[in-house]
Image (cartoon, rainbow, N blue to C red; front, top):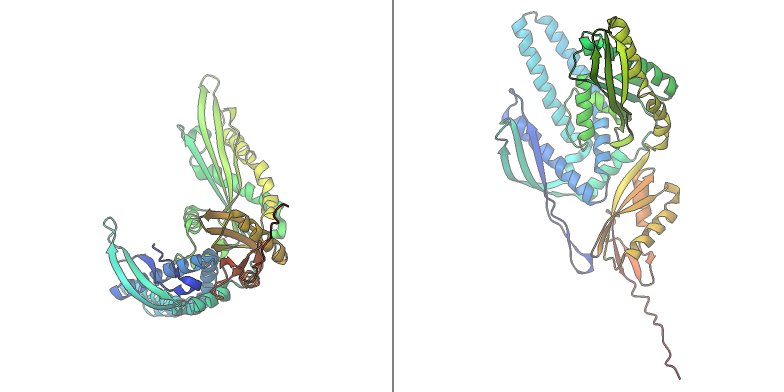
Length: 456
């Protein structure tokens, strides 16, 4: 994705340039050309909007997550109504071949309906003033995967309005879902050698005990503890890796809402047989692994620990006793870290937001440090903190963290206009609809000079 940055002339007059965005879409067998084109364009518009938000210092990830959540809420009753209509048609058509045709038509019409409503939802695409298609292409390896690159001009005032409309609600700090994934890996041995027929015989028991313990630790502070399956794991991976602007399919809409205020607890163990004495019917096992907890909304790692390697000797004369001993061991190993999870979650604030602040015409790094102090003082009510991301030449970039609504931090930055920095500079904001880009300019009213007297 390429960004054509605004260029500033003397006195900060703005030359507006188009922004490039790439849309990609992998079609299905029954997708017609019009649907594919519309989906590609919409995805390209979203890429353009993401770039514009990032360039303006807005939190694009937070916006897209809120956008998809609110669309899921809006679309759910529409989907339910259409499904009820579809069920009535199926009841009237008992013929198997006819029912299959109706299923295909229903799925296709639902995708069309979802795309049309999403394009209109929140007046998002109204922010695209004009656009032109720069190129179209397909993946050589995957012919159904198509790409489009567009150049678009954006109505930034309208885009800012849409942004604040979707993000102005305070983020709830309460968790709703805790997802527990367990991966048990065998190194050079079979499931039968640890006393079970398959992995599920062992892992399901351990996971249920972890779930019960987590329920005791969290009590009513969490709504659902979910033992994941392969499909949920894949959706969690997609959600965690995505930039939140991705268009999820209609089946994922519901899960997005539960992922939003969720924690993903991933536990891994590896068992290796390092010795066996057949005449005594005993085996010596080496067990290792790790645990990681991911906060899904902000894509943060809040807990990570490599387990200490342990060696244990068990009899395999009785398979049930062998598997029970191993299950008890595997349950115990991560318990110290699992017990820390509630305090780790309390230590993070799911209600804090981030924004990028660009500063231009900097003379030295001291000016940036002074600006940080001003932000901390004036932003005490929002608990504003900042750290320096980049300082090169006369430009700097600060990451701001704060509590409350995005409109509050925007108003705080607008209040900095004409505030003094050092002895001879003022903060200016050329575009009041984008307070996330500041300029430090000379204070023309400060012409005082210090006279150094010559020695007599």
